[in-house]
Image (cartoon, rainbow, N blue to C red; front, side, top):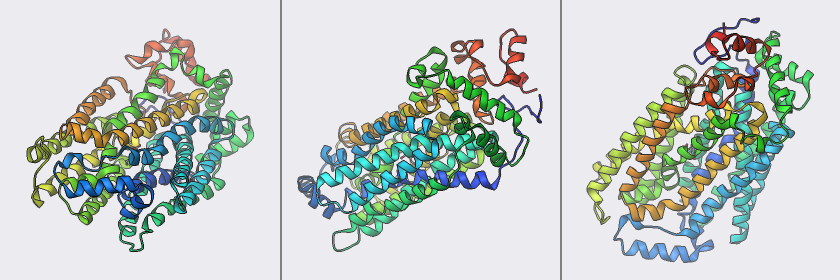
Length: 529
Ligand code: BGC
């Protein structure tokens, strides 16, 4: 096989080329699409706990909360208002629907226009929210923000995974998650500041500042080149080849180019990606597109992200201290993400998933037990400072575990496993399942805390056990495997292999031959030689 093919761990080959500044820069710009999602996750909880905001838009909620504050009895049942959580989570429903439309834009017009569209819509939403005079403007703004998130989360991970050289794909893709965590942290810090604004308009600043990340990705997208994969697929073969040379920093791109063309030809046979994705041979990818985002949300991470201030207040921290603790978890979230950036292409995805899952489980057991031991089922207790600090410590260790496993990998893995013909559709399923369960958990957490009490931590812990076993048995390692060759990985998996017929394996001319010579068994290690 021409072109310096080397055998590498995951299977498949390594195309020539290096990490060029061009790719690095393009990936950094595209990754900023994660800022809008993160900003929103971080901003809502703080804003909805600001009294002027509640008094203006949700006076009934405000009164109920004041009453609950007065008769401080059961700590588990504070602040439970479906109307308010509905406001927060309307965004996720909008994002869910939008990601399906984004799928078509991403496929037909290219990845960059989806990012641009997402940025602009989010920008308008931020303006509406910042200037909101009534609940209608507020909700309309939320819906636009949601559409923006739907488009960005659909296109950015795909863009990053297609642009990156295979052996650095994990690192570059996780730029998206890094931006999400930075968005969350900035939002927490901003809320911390705006909550102190005396005039009662601090919430407007918090909501309007969402325009900043929106402008960054909207303007950035205009300058982004499209991915070679998308260019080939849309018939721009010459520009695709030129782009491939440019992004790989070498003229020796024939082999990768041929694989892209083969992938694109395959994709041309598919007129209905949505119907197609249901075919038996795509069952492994479809399963992952549903299971991974579902499990990511069932780790319970957004209980911390959305409700950290409430949670810390429940633990007996004063207002300021509880916000500060939320900022601490935000910092841990950002820094722990770097661990996965550095290790994901060396250790691989599976090791991080398994380690992170185990760590989260241990922390959930400790946190649940610590809270249970003090509050019991009655929810009445006075927690000493040192004890509460100990709980925060374990919550931080839990966040760190998530930040180097399910956080980044929940976006990376689905974006790298689909063949081109169903990639856009598959990513939409990933985004929409993620949004659906973000919504459900945001909606259900407070009533659940009220009814399950400290058992809630064990509930999410049990899910972490399930998902860790799922990864151990069903997720093959995908590190270093070129994206248009991923089918080989599924074909050689002990369980998923049976869903893929040998005729279904097309990865360019080079690699089909040995499959036949090998009695139809595809062995990626052999193929690479
Ligand atoms: C998840 C979000 C979560 C965030 C926390 C993301 O990967 O999709 O739901 O809030 O990580 O950092």
